[in-house]
Length: 261
Image (cartoon, rainbow, N blue to C red):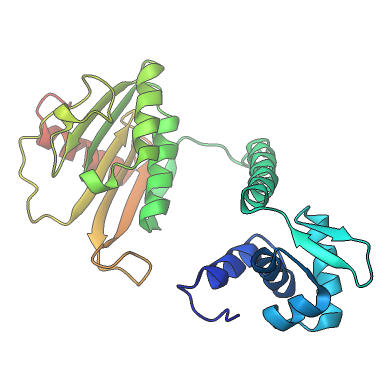
């Protein structure tokens, strides 16, 4: 069994198991047991390229995660849980950790809490920019205005817009390369048509929340992390009524659509 081919399912499985915190030997052992169904340490060692003495350490680690069962025979035999069970175990474990982390971080108060954040901040990467956009929309209490490319209107962003509309926030969305008025993913009646043409403009999205928090992004040449032919995204954001970026983008939104004052 080879673990050097990134397109090979065995290699992918090992990489993901290591990302979840398993040691390399434990990850290889689990994948080998998945292939074999049930096996002895000798069988696993031969297939997974794990020293036989280390197979026992690896299976002990896997048992702690509930991923392997042991038959007390001579020699001992091991069997892996199903792919579905393994997925549920890791999903449950890491969902719990994420919730505990969110709760702990939420309980930590800033040393100097302030709605005004001086300067302009930068965030790079499509997922990271989307996360920041969702965070801003989730905090909205009065108004959200978004001008975006269709490809950047992710499910997470659309869900955040719907949630904001459900709690009474005025949500307005315009598409740079699609008609937001016909977009079924968005809250009813939130779409508006910008009078400005966006063809050839490298802009990605413009977001204004409660007229106190703004974000603007552009699409740039990727660094190898994006799918072939897809450009990466870089954004700047600012917060506070007197923040320079907020002041500039409020003016820009008024320019984009006369009724956005």
